[in-house]
Structures are given as structure tokens and as C-alpha cells.
Image 1 (tube, rainbow, N blue to C red):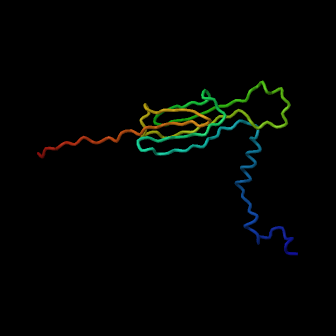
Image 2 (cartoon, rainbow, N blue to C red; image 1 turned 60 degrees about the vertical axis):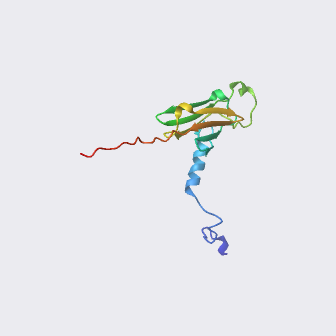
Length: 144
């Protein structure tokens, strides 16, 4: 009989209520058919005198990707739109929509004039050379 009590808390580890997950589900269902601005996954490695940034952007053409630098902030953005010619097909469900992706990185310690970019097999690769360490000039002060 005690198993039928609706608010029995004996199995908390099995069933847990997360109000934030519920709100996320509501938001996803509400905005399910609208394009979303999202980010993409990146890997950054330190190669000694430079950093190597690899960003996953599968399915994009090179022309759809832009890299902008503004005030020591590098922004990678990509935009994809679905082909309107396919609208006459009899889709039951269509999950591939227009979407834009954007991500920004601090490049204050990077020599921005020497950045190299390449795009192969859905991976955008940026080589970000580090700025040379500034060695302060030494001088001798006179004692007065």
C-alpha cells in the first residue's frame, strides 16, 4: 500500500524533478521551427609560437564563413540557408533549416597581421601566431 503514495520520496535518485530542464524543454518546443543562433565546437592547441584553432563547421561552403577582427576580438560566423527549390517536395518532417553560428575569441596576445585560415572537410583551421614578447629596454639612471 505504501508504494501507491504519490509523493513518496524513497527513490529520489531514480526520479528527480528539474524545473530548469522543464523550462528548457518548453523553450525548445516553442522555438522549434525558428532559426537559432548557436555556437559551434572548437579545439585550441598551443603549438609554442602560435595557437591552432580548429572549428567544426560541417556542411558549410567556404563562402558562407566569415572571420572578422575588431578591437582584439576575433569573431567566426557562418550562415546557412535552406534551398527554396526543395519546397515543392512532400516533406513529412524537415529539421534542416536556416541557421547562423557565431563565436568570438580574445586575440589580444596574437599577431593579427599573420593569422592564417584554411577550411577543409568541414573543419576551419586558424593559425594564430603569438606576439613576440616585448623586452623592456635597459638603461642606467643617473643619481643626482
